[in-house]
Image 1 (spheres, rainbow, N blue to C red):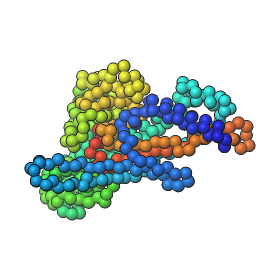
Image 2 (cartoon, rainbow, N blue to C red):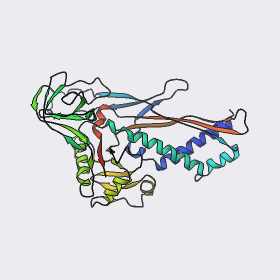
Image 3 (cartoon, rainbow, N blue to C red):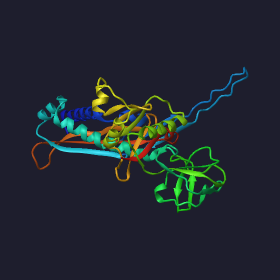
Image 4 (tube, one colour):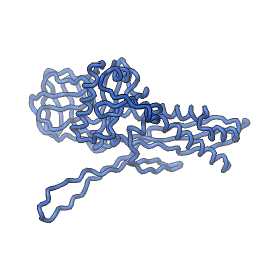
Length: 360
């Protein structure tokens, strides 16, 4: 592979990524707080690193006690891997496509990458923190929880497998736990953790009322949608999530309902990049609302309308390899490229991510 072809391949990759970032919503709802280690022929790694909060104490004049902030880290699983491989008529024509920012080849490449990437990022709704889901809760019957093990026995309950993984909170609990379904009357609850070994620290509960969050889908209308969005904002407020950089992503059906409500403040067209290209439709209850058709779900079983803060999801994307090669057994040349990426929601950042399970 000659140097000219390699450089031209890298230029195409850069131009395609530029087109991708013009339209993707992923960069508006995620952060890039990672370090990267991509190796040819070896293991790829993107690592998220973060520090916990420090404590601010009352000063009394006595010697201060030094504090060691907690440090958390986690590897991003590179679950997003896409490749390009297509024939090009000639290097000169290919170079002309790259130099023309309005070329169909670049636009199509950027658009396809945008659809794939946004679909991938928006599939991380399942990483929402326990207690951050908005839907129809289930609270029929009472429960008894065993200390240490988190084993739950229900009386008068009819739990289903669809409740597996949802948030659970009983009277006497000070925080939400993750529910693991076993049967209509039995299950287990544990701390809301993926990075550490999940255990239960909530103590014994006996014959108490409880809630399993968002156990069934909501039906949204123009008159009730604002109330559910404020419920979402209240959940972030309760977790002390900053009020800046909050976002929500809806599809066309839900966007239409929101536009017909009285509470949406429409986005102004002067912010062209966000309004036109990235689908910003306005602001409501402190959320910047984006319209994107890659929202997970459907109108039969329900859409997962994600909301959160930019700190929640760490997202990395990079062209790992790119270049131009001769076609074996044929005339001309071909371009090929490999793009890799992945998302990670650290345990302590799950509290900044949620979703509304709804349909029209």
